[in-house]
Image (cartoon, rainbow, N blue to C red; front, side):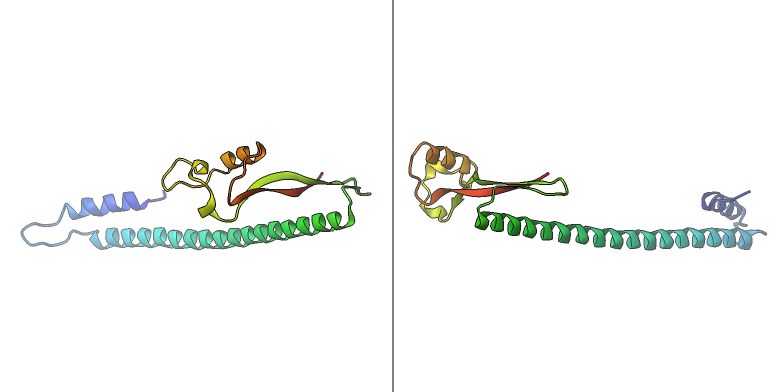
Length: 163
């Protein structure tokens, strides 16, 4: 029968309940019951140490994998910019590769608001929360309607897709 730490402690407590109250003499079996609790406690502690070491090892490995993912994504972002810039330099908007990939550049398709001086932007283009951040949505709507918004402009960027 496999004795658990819980049952070993129960056994030690029942032995301690037999202590002679007048003399304080420990009953027979105290040393073996205490030894069993110590042995089981040591095994639980060893298991904890082992699983903590395994968890640390797995965590370290996971961090290394996440670092590799981050590096690969960063490299791919650079490569996409590199490809996009060179397609733009060559005036190419579409490439069909022998591997079956279609690479398209959409000139000035993606538009976003670029605020180069927040202090110049009128209060009506600020979002509601305090402190009020700038609402690029409001600025874009105004600029699209031909309203000049000081300190902001629409910037058109190329987009690249790889399928």
